[in-house]
Amino acid sequence: MNDLAIAANGLRKSYGDKTVLDGVDLAVPTGTVFSLLGPNGAGKTTVVKILSTLVTADAGAIRIGGHDPAADPRAVRAAIGVTGQFSAVDGLITGEENMLLMADLHHLSRSEGRRVAAGLLERFDLVEAAKKPASTYSGGMKRRLDIAMTLVGDPRIIFLDEPTTGLDPRSRHNMWQIIRELVTGGVTVFLTTQYLEEADQLADRIAVLNNGRIVAQGTADELKRLVPGGHIRLRFTDPAAHRSAAAALREVVLTEPRLPSDGGDPAEEALSLRIPSDGSQRELRSVLDLLDSAGVEADELTVHTPDLDDVFFALTDTTDIPGQAGQPKETVR
Ligand SMILES: Nc1ncnc2c1ncn2[C@@H]1O[C@H](COP(=O)(O)OP(=O)(O)OP(=O)(O)O)[C@@H](O)[C@H]1O
Image 1 (cartoon, rainbow, N blue to C red):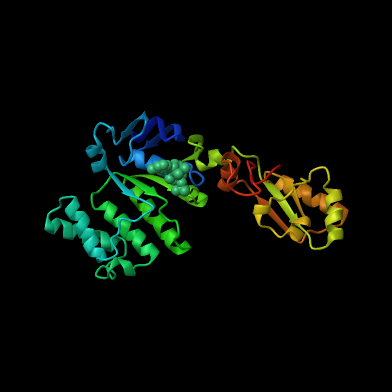
Image 2: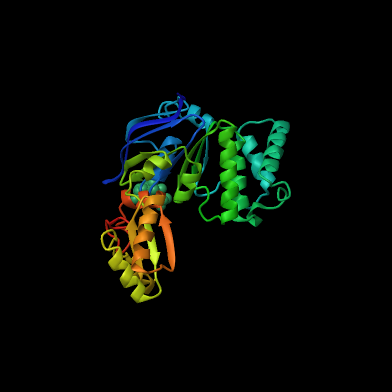
C-alpha cells in the first residue's frame, strides 16, 4: 500500500452563513492522479486552496506530504506546486525571465537557476519562445510555462486547478501527456477539472463533489458502475418504419422525453427509440431479430455505454440549468 501524499478528514469551510465544504474526506496515495470533479461552485477551488495553505479550513484534519498545513505551512509549501485557474505567468517579461524569477524565489543560485530553467524550457517545448514576452504566447504555451514554473521547485505534489480549461484539443492532449510524465516521475497530481473525459483519461481515482460533500469516490470504472446501464439507440427517417419498430419492440423500448438542454433536434428525436442494454452481442442480436421479424430496418443504430457524463449528471444536481432542475440527464433507462 502506498503512503498517502494527501489526506483530509472532515474538511469544513463556510463563508458567512454559506457552507461551502461540509465534511470532506480525501485520500490520495503517493504517485497517483486524483481528480476532483464537481459542477461550478461545488467547492473544488476551495478544497485546493485549503490543501495548498492559501485558505484555512474551519475544521478538519489535513496531511500534505506528511505535514499539517495549519501547523507547518512552510513545510507544505516546500512540498507542493500549485497551478491555478489564474496563471502565475507575467506577460510583460519573457518566458525565460519568468522561469528565472521562480528560480530566485526558490533561492537557487544563478547558475543552478539557469540550468533548471533551460532544462524545463526544453522539456516543455518553449526554447524557441523563451526570449519572447509571455504575453505573445498562445493559451497552450502559457499553460506549459505555468507548469514549468511550478516545477522549478521540484515539488512532489502538484495541484492543478482546471489545467486545460480553454485549451484546444491538441493543447489539451499535450497537457495530458505532461501530466502522465509527471506521474511517471513519481509526482502526485491533484487535479480539478470540468472535463469528465480528462478525469477518465488521467485519474487513478475520482471524487465527485456536490453541495460541499463527496457524493461518490472511486476509479472511473467503479463510478460508471454506479449509474444505470447503457442503451441501444435506433434512428429512423421514415415515420412508418419508426411506428413498426416501436410496435415490434414495445416490450423493451423506453419512452423517454428528451430534456430541452440535451440539444437534439426534436423532429429527429421523435423518430428515435431507446432500448436499455448492456451493449452485449446477445442483447443486440435480440433487438435486431425483433426488427427483422417486423421487416423494418433502422437508419442508424448506436450503442451507448455509461460514461462519466452519466455519472456526473446522475450524482450532481443541476438546479442552475433552466429546465433541468434536480433531474439527471437521462430520466429513465
Ligand atoms: N472568498 C470567498 N468568499 C465568499 N464566498 C466564497 C469565497 N470563495 C468561494 N466562495 C463561494 O464558495 C462556493 C464554492 O466556490 P469554489 O470556487 O470553491 O467552487 P468551484 O467548485 O471551484 O467552482 P468553479 O468550477 O466555478 O471554479 C461558491 O459558491 C463561491 O461563491
